[in-house]
Image (cartoon, rainbow, N blue to C red; front, side):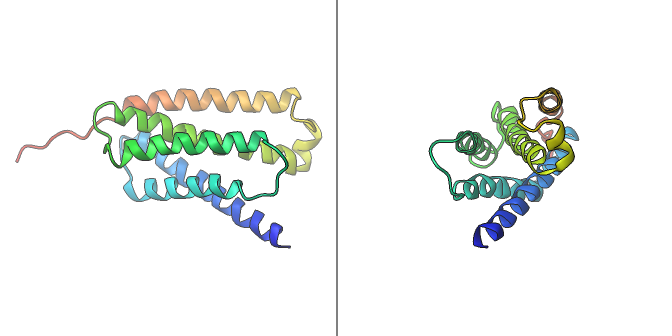
Length: 162
């Protein structure tokens, strides 16, 4: 019963991370910082990764690897965004790392969808079938393209003369 409640909480945090991540992504594409949304995106994404480590597991799993990778990329995004304040190259580094962390959450969301949704599980029961691989490939390509566009569009604010 406790594990079921924990799973629901973890899932809700993950969905909040994905939602706020897409809001932040649209902000990046529009060249806007969206400070409040960014804060919530980073908090919920860190919480998603951290809470993922507290599920019962046996041995070192791909989920643990993904969680560690996500936290490393998040650390760089947070460093670029706050201590470095998006100065110079840290601006595009932030964009790339923020979008990577969103992609990792979406990647896990797709894996979970193919595990939990009966229609998806029926067409890719082992997640080695073409529908699953094609879905992940299309999403990866879209995220790469979006990252490039966001890095180009998210420019420093012009300095205003006083």
